[in-house]
Image (cartoon, rainbow, N blue to C red; front, side, top):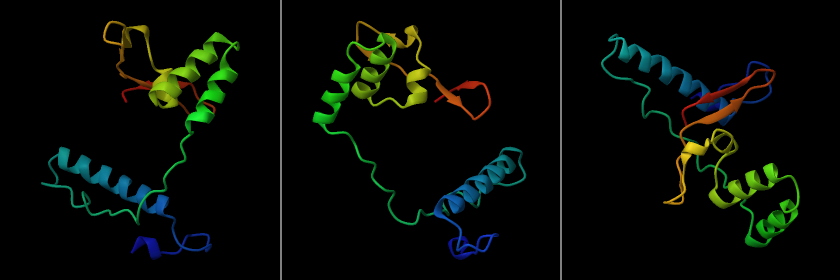
Length: 130
């Protein structure tokens, strides 16, 4: 029903992102009510159905990745390392920025993501669990 509700400014209906955000907010409030013992279950849980499939994001092909790696070589080691790591692992920006040396197991050649860094406009960076 919310998908067909008009926006307050009168410019069409609510976007899918708005509907999803409203559901998430309501679901969070009702989950807190369950945690506090006011409700036995969350009635909003599982009632939201996305309006179709999410758009697939384009992924760089092998040739583009090779060009990027070549462009980074010889640049600042910090940026070269960062971008090569992101390209090789698929880490998100916040996950890569949250890495510490202790997150790397050199013997097993693995990286364990234990935190992410979020930067909000005009605020300090926040480190949080992924």
